[in-house]
Length: 395
Image (cartoon, rainbow, N blue to C red; front, side, top):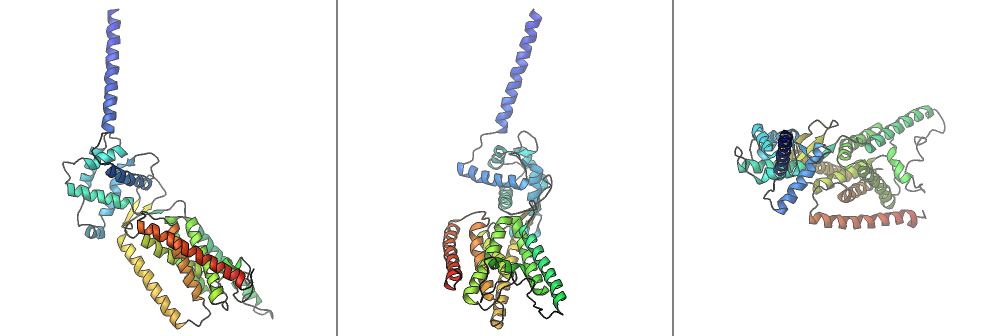
């Protein structure tokens, strides 16, 4: 009997010790950290964005992936010179994150994330730690390029344009010896005709047809170079709306200012993408310090590139393109090209992109600018529609 009582007491003692160990472990895992509420709010926002980049479905970030991201950004020579000229030792990073990882599971939780920045590490200076913090904030605000889901709108519309050009070339070749030969025969019902009564669909369908291969190649170059990457950042729906709005704005404005010109080709949509590219550069100028390429396979670390140089090259390219376009217009203003459609396509893309594309940090001036541009766009849109469908007898 005494032996049984001793065994029961021993078992209860062991269970009591196990409970104490578990409670102490929980206390260690979520240590109360001396950070202000504002600092916690800022780091929580950074942590959530890093979770998205990590592709982790849980509420913890893979420490190894996080270190790889920081080292990838720091290894860039441009980053070294432009961001203070400080080098990072991977071993120091591993030690800092390992000390913050209280339960030693290789992942960092939000509580452990707070602990990382509140406490000093014996082997890392505060200056180095501040640099690591800035690197993480840069990564969290980086342009996030997603490969999945893949871009759909620009590839589909490009394929459709190619098919129509091939079809037109074949049909025109067959009809060359016919007395009723007309170069517009195969797609005349899709062209927007300014002087005659156009069907409603022609305000958009003219963007699908091209007479010359050179024209189509230029359109495809702009569409594929700008549109696909923009879809991977902002999504197919947003870019589709921007492109189609530019096409529609081109036909509306052409009817008002140069009704004698028949429209065909995707230039209105291309100029809309160019305007949208400029708008996104303005909105995210300070956030585009880094570019993150997320991978199809979630277990792989995302690839990160330095974004400042790319950002400046984009701006330089856009400004150079616009200057060249103005010069060409000044020499060929009397041609049958509707430069009005190009201009209003650009304006439409700029305005719409300003309030529907992803703005990673919305400042006060951006908020008011979006409201003002939205009002201006709505007014111009309704004036153009009324002018097209009422003033010139389309009602």
